[in-house]
Length: 458
Image (cartoon, rainbow, N blue to C red):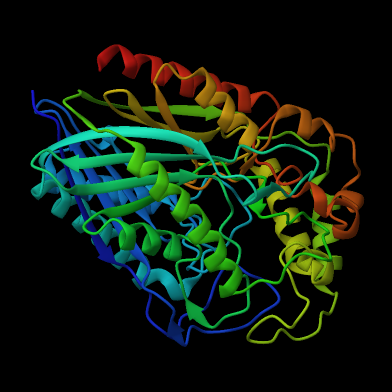
């Protein structure tokens, strides 16, 4: 049995002239590129079992795109589809591709149709190239903390999981192959301040690691960042540092420098079996007390509200921590459409794909949610592996998933009050969760059970 690994990447930068997505309060088309958006693939093999991890600089990987990538990778390589995981970095400076997403209220953007087809081919091609380059390798990992780079944006008094995980994969013949870096921080540092495509803080993070370690492929895997923002930003914070590339680069390089220090302390070991498994969960959709007629009436009423015209880029003072309060109509309509979708599909379970991939003492377990960080930490603490990455935003986009105690905070709030952005902006991620109370614990338990099964096989 010989442990082998291969890596490859592909440029997935969208064409210019397409809408810059993900942010309200602006109306712009892309006019340039700050740095390329890329897709990357890591393929692992022990001679009997193979698995693939595919990541990309997108805000979402909708279920349709994930299925396309898995199907094409399997056709090209023979890697089982249940051993392939497709991840988004949650880059808010990228196009919003949500086709097939489990959550309601997020409309597709027709302008991205042809680009979405290209992305599926490009990501599958990267995985094929990585598979073709499989070579004997050694793997090791280290977990440290990166304090001061993130904070809880829902409740700034809460602690956050600021752990930084680095998985180092070296060529058995000598030399670096890959550095997987995982941390939980929302990639929202640029905001609506640019007319360029960019990779958010993941761009300077990768650059700092690959500059310090020539020949390595730095692959970022987003953690459970549903309630984690950069630095000390929190919802309603009128004194938050302004968005922009200066702050973005400070965040990315801060994570990258700590990743390089961790990488240097890791001693990879050869060998190690590879195991992978996929579990499909059917989660109950959230039950709320709002009537469909009440929701539709408020949608009609809100549609008559006039907001000032949006510029190409945000004016000074516009910030994602407060933009919903300054430009509420988009956020209110999104919440109302989501509540209506919950009623219309009340008896249709929300399907959630959980994928686990392990190599020796290292494991990655994924979920499609914007999982709050406390739940992600619970998965890691209960894992039987020496090192575990709990990765969100993978294989679909299923919306926010907070803890039950957070849902209890908004359980009896009337509809008109819950969508009031001045009153309940702090609860974003809770008010718009798509699944019912108790389901977060099912996700955690099933993720841990999957890890336990993988541990028995490696």
